Amino acid sequence: MGERCSWCGTDPLYVAYHDNDWGVPEWDSRALFEKLLLDGFQAGLSWYTILKKRDNFRAAFDGFDPAIMARYDDRKVESLMQDAGIVRNRAKILAAIGNAQAWLDYEAANGKGSFATFLWGFVDGAPTQNRFKSMADVPAETPESKAMSKALKKLGFKFCGPTITYAFMQACGLVNDHLVTCPSHDKVAALATN
Image (spheres, rainbow, N blue to C red):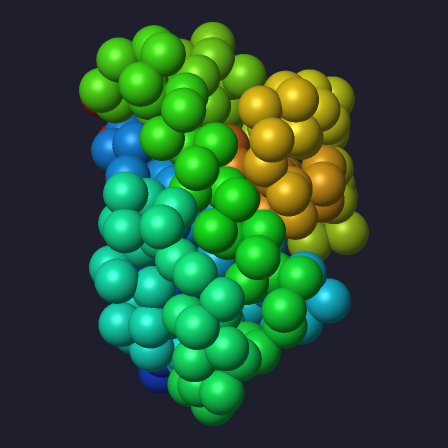
């Protein structure tokens, strides 16, 4: 058995995330929406910071229900700005609310679950199976993440630059970036069919 990807270190929370979540293909439109927002909140921070606050985020943002979030008013924004359990960044909070409206608009125009189809279209509907041997080989962005970022921005999404979208693609299994020496590489590869 090989060694885990080094980025998760030895913290039990991070190791569990690496072993059970990261890179596992996510096909659900709402779950993808949540993960995209969390990656947006991560901008400039470590993922570990967001991971520790993930349950708080879910509670503060009504389970990341876009229909509820899109109706947030100034009072709710101020409430979120006082919530120490989340990242209190006004621009990111406002972006999350706008992203909820963009998600609703896309799903209304294209059908329930269409956001997942849209995102998976950037990898032709199936996870890209990378075979990186070292963390130095893993890119920060790719042509696909740049295209996804551009398309999301055109839909009205914010905090979705190409580095954020690539981290999102890694986390949601659109790409398998577990190192080939990591036991999770083959486990995630086996989940590559919808």
